[in-house]
Amino acid sequence: MDNFEHPVFIGGTGRCGTTVMADFIGSDDNFFLPCHENKLIVEADGLIDLCTAFTSHNDDPIRKHRALVRFFLWSERLRDLGCQNMEINKQLHEVTKLIGWQNAVDLIQREFPNEKINIHAIGDCLGKSHYDKVINNFFLSLIEKEIKAGIVDTLGLLKPFYIGITLTREEFLTRCRKFLKELYYDEGRVR
Image (tube, rainbow, N blue to C red; front, side, top):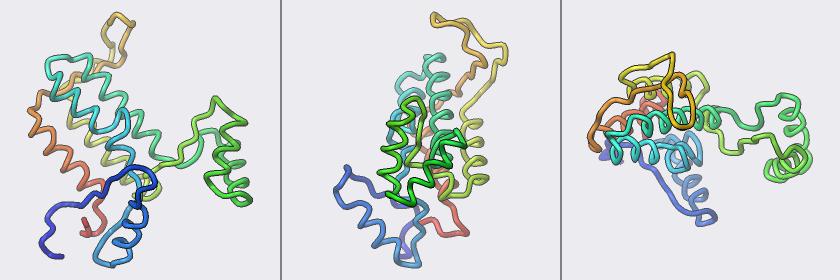
């Protein structure tokens, strides 16, 4: 067990046993299990899309800007479980007591189709202030300059406009590793 130098991530498709595996590994006091699913990495607008924008399209500042903004918005959405509307969120939690989380989300989402209800938040698991700090530091580490007045693009004014730094793929992945280590850090337990 002492030969692990980096965090271990377990991945798989839905219903393939990753939750059971995570529960089993997480039952060992030597391991820290902050949350079962981190949609910040693989989902649309997550780390993989950000990596693509920074390494495959390194010379396209607008693509980098959009990837940065989408990543930041996605990370904000993953911060809190439930809905941003406090009245609907309160209703969601009351219904959860009666029929369970997944059924309650399904029912409330059908009743309020225009509301975004998040069922995969990780901010609560990791501590919201810690989550916010690490996300903001990572975001700022990828920005060379912020143009508050914005720039004009074919789609309109992009305001503010973020100029992303130039990185090789290896440099970007090194930053991602550092970011994930900081995100999952818990009193020295990084595995």
